Image (cartoon, rainbow, N blue to C red; front, side, top):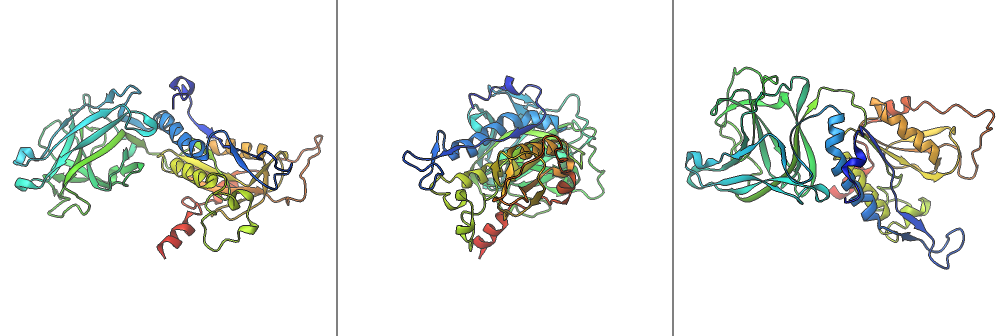
Length: 414
């Protein structure tokens, strides 16, 4: 993280990330590497996972702004809060004994960056059972009418929380409330469309209340409560100590066709080392030797997962074996992590650049290869090079949510 200085990224609105460990022959190996392989330099974990996490932690606020997000709360690199100021509002107001606060830790965020910690102890004693932190009234109130909803970047603890929006400066007023679940031990972005916020007053929904006026957001409140609404209980509530790290709250834009803000170069084969029923003898060396290579594909997959979970519009490109062949070969795009083959590095670079300007490529993961067999070198006439293929139809045919991990998850469920 120390090398990723903010000045390096000033003005950056999108990123192509292509990083990898160096794999080479051990001493005494044959020229074509038939005997042994080794990782040279940094480990796969450090490069493919920790390095990606650090890059995302540094870039996320800047790329989110470039994507049209309006940041309401964040922290500087030194841990100072930016934006809304918060104070505790717990069940002591009704006789309970719970207590909470929003504290700041300079090392608790992703990549060792700062985070705010919503923490305390929640108790059901004396008919209590909630803790919360609430902003001071925002002056002026925020006009978020050009946005679709709110997003919160958190490291979950497995509990369900509430985010409450108020459109008046009155203290004890109607609040528009959305509940959200968190993933224990994982950083993730929770998106809450404004359409999901229900009018609530003292844990009771208010039929006939006016819709949420997103042009006049006066305050926010973050809550952990035993209660849901109208007498229902929070199904994941656990009394006792709790900590919810968070790094930002922002409004995300009304943009049905986002452009990718990070294009990440992964690798075909990342889901195959543990795939049941796979004939390893027909797989590339990295799949067959994943364990011997320090879990190279396993860590690549974790890096991909970090990109997909970043909350940023993304594209994950998984090339097959890389060659020095020129641009212009016929291409095959696929999903589900099943294909093998080869593709030129220059072709992969061209695909990455094309994805940056294609809404059709946003939030998709795919493999790509040349249809020219491995045994046949692909060459071009420099005086009459072929036209590069149009990637847009390929991007448009891809589906979001397909990674190849589906087969692993199905096997685990059996």
